[in-house]
Image (cartoon, rainbow, N blue to C red; front, side):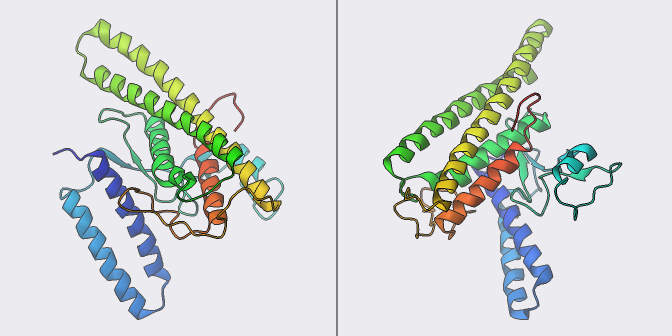
Length: 276
């Protein structure tokens, strides 16, 4: 039986928790802590098996590192002499275990979607919607009036790309199931066009969030009062929100981590001829 989107997302969360717990287990020198972590690991593994007893299904793919060319790597480190890059060897980009997208699990935008780039971008958009955007709501951050209006305008971009993603997923499935050659060719052209639109809209979406967060963080650093509850910590309501990553973070820390996610996402969206 195929898993629902909610079950796939739940698997993704459990895998992320397991990765973090296993990482702590490796470095911990406290035996009591190790025992507690081991029990928690077994608990999450049991939950994963409860959802998917036959293992990870096709709808869930393990992310692969995005590779930068040697020229890009050398250019990005030109001002840091401590980062020596051998020009004949490519270096890993953002999908590594050392950063905000660590242990990312890529989900298919639809069952018959085999385009790695489209699936990755769809996963990033979903992660943005479920894990990061909730922190901007009035129940967590009380912005002043001008920033509320700006935030609401940005959220409309998210609604637009959700519609684009839905249309693309439907076209992908129609293309996969079509048997008539002439209709299949027509759907193929539509799929390619919609894929390009989706990639471009995703780039614009993340750039819009980046500009907003840069502005907010700059104003906070300058001591400008734009958030009324700046000293509070983020606490999500599990009855209504699925977000967990930013739980217990202070508002400034949550916004900085949000910004890091946006930057990492942008560095994994290929937009030829466009600045990021």
